[in-house]
Amino acid sequence: MSSTHSHPHVEDHFESTEMVRDVVIGMSDGLTVPFALAAGLSGAVSSTHLVVLAGLAEIAAGSIAMGLGGYLAARGDAEHYASERVREEREIVERPRDEEQEIYEIFEQYSVARTESEPVLSALKRNPTAWVDFMMRFELGLEEPHRNRASRSALTIAVSYVVGGIVPLLPYMLVQESSEALKLSVVITLAALLVFGGIKGQLTGTGWLKSATQTVLIGGVAAGAAYGLAKLLGRSGI
Amino acid sequence: MSSTHSHPHVEDHFESTEMVRDVVIGMSDGLTVPFALAAGLSGAVSSTHLVVLAGLAEIAAGSIAMGLGGYLAARGDAEHYASERVREEREIVERPRDEEQEIYEIFEQYSVARTESEPVLSALKRNPTAWVDFMMRFELGLEEPHRNRASRSALTIAVSYVVGGIVPLLPYMLVQESSEALKLSVVITLAALLVFGGIKGQLTGTGWLKSATQTVLIGGVAAGAAYGLAKLLGRSGI
Image 1 (cartoon, rainbow over the protein chains, first blue to last red):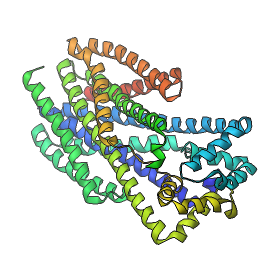
Image 2: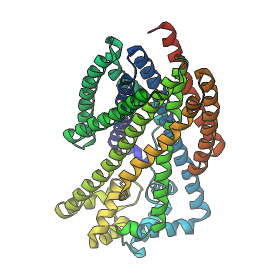
Image 3: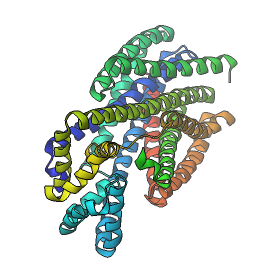
Image 4: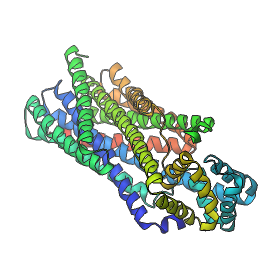
């Protein structure tokens, strides 16, 4: 890819951005869902053993489902890019007039007249690879996905989910009484969500305070709903 | 936005694509994680009551966490777009030479010489809104997010998660014995994953057979791992 090779810094930047995004995806859900599930169950059963069992089963299921889901999504993006690229490569050979027309239309959206975009078109026609690169980016809005993106993404999401998920379960592993463990779990998980949300906000540019507040709120609402539901169902004996 | 207003069909297409993506996100995890959790627990406890309780708590936690997560992600995209747009609007006024330079550089990536991109630059300079639109799309690669995208996205993801999650739990609600319920849950969930994966493959262009196979495989692996882990922990009495 000529266009990305000439921009190593840009590419590094995108790679680390993708990594941050994957850690955020995995850890947000990892810190929230097992926490909420454990809180919910501790409202209905007194044995921490069962809470830990359900929590670990959820972490196994969630990390695998999200990791493999991320893998397939990234693989799908790569395949979509490759097949669209082959189509564009064929079209500039088989239907060059249509493709020229498309370039004029892209520029017309920005009030650039045909006479003004014509020199760009001539330049692209001299260089078929650049022409295809241009169509991929400016007609279709597609960026070439990174090599190994899929497996790296899967692993990052899964590991982040496991790391995030273990935090709220720790108290249930260490404390016998589930209502005691719940209190401890609430404290350390809200603290972890606060720190994680703050770092996330710093990295994504949302601002640390706003992001920390939002992250804690999501975890709290999800856990509260799960706790309330389990308490209700546990009491009604369903 | 002049560029989107002139393309109603394109916008409709993107909106339905986003909707499909949100349904896929919610339903993939909804069908997989509660299924895997219930399978895992049924390997360790004999009471279906507890499996249903944990499953419903997981659905409540998962749908809220994923829905609100989707809401924040979409809101974050919209805020990022708006703040970058304000920055570009300021820069074409305060640092027009730098912005001109950036346009030349964008075209140079596609082997278009300065003399050839110059007419495009002149056209953009006549029309500041189009110039900003152009920089947003071609320098930054950002598309304007749709209005109400965030709340629509949150609702679609959450509802899809609940709908997907109820399917594997139904047998545990109807059958008393958890090992019997497990068998039934495996059958109807794999069937649901097969149908869902097939439709997903048709809509996203991956091909129905390939997508159906992948979706069933993810659900199976996640459930198998959760089942194995819970069985192991249940037996060792941790």
